[in-house]
Image (cartoon, rainbow, N blue to C red; front, side):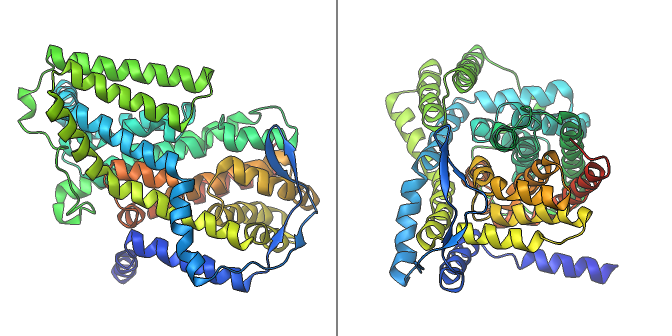
Length: 467
């Protein structure tokens, strides 16, 4: 048993640095453009978006990516991801100004003081579910401004930045990915399959909140482990400047100035929620509001123009590595488009599923969607590219349309936990200052547990003809 544990630990230590990992994937995709035939499905416009026409896959002339084009894809990736790159910087600026005003530190210190450090494990559980519910109801990148708060809270409880990512990024990724009302995966899937919108919510809700419970359990277990032995922390050496509490918990209280800064932040979040749900706001509008919040927080905290300017630049310097990783990861998507191999991968995986036993085919469909997600890291994009193929395939195998969509949601949603090509994941991890290689070491056991639970849900769905 000890040998097995040491082998697993040795495996996780071999996970390469995030830059190395992404560059390896870039090289792999480039090689695949020479190995796999270029292919494409016919597409038709549906509600302003391109949807795949079933049974229309065809081989097209190969467009292998050359050595120069492999590197040219990198600036093109930054160009394609500019909106997410900027929201990372805008979010960093907003949090940097709020932190400079001491409002975040005093708010977290006062919260911990009120609830008591003796209840730290309960706080971790409650916050994991709060962040998870934000993922379920509000979305993914929309919550990026909330991530740094978890960093300050985690450190105040005696945890580290990895725990902060587990509480916030882990919970929001699970909540969003398995949400019974996810408009990008479930909503798009139901529209394509002509099922009632967000039908079958009971099983999805049970699965989603069970998964959040597992995430909360792992977060508490990790906190207990590093409190007992700080040497086991995966966050050793990560930059915690401006995130730690500067005085004993008993000394914390909120000043009038702090309350004004927090009020500005809350009012900004209210505007964001209204804009997202009523005005179709997305990344650029959120970035604009983040900058407005930063400006007004600086004004109400009576920062001088010089102090505010210096804080902005310092915040940008802290957010820059994460912003870089977003653009770097997006170059993989650009390479796929250059080589025209995305549809080929989808088509080949669909062929593998043909002829599989009923229960195995449901799980296999989920696994195939996980693989595709690394190449098409967009829920709605993946739904439009694969479900028109997978839905008739599932019916030919004896799977209801609802089961096919559940398999798609599980494959897409859970693989997002470790997907280095997903800009939103990289962006939110960067707000916790956690590189993805460290994150994978932490979250991988959680992912395995969640996949087992999810596959059990798929088996139940097949057994009950989930419809």
